[in-house]
Length: 67
Image (cartoon, rainbow, N blue to C red; front, side):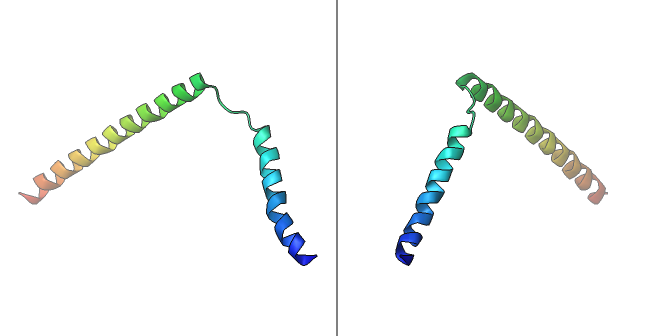
């Protein structure tokens, strides 16, 4: 009896997972492509911005230390 309960818990969990996944509204292919493009562009912009600040601060530090 106890052994049967041990094996039923994972099955109950998997059934619940399937029910929840059936409720998910998945994005369309076009939505996925557009949102992925936006994420890549924002990542590149932020990366260049941080890189620019890093370069500026590096040059400023070199200028102040080489006086």
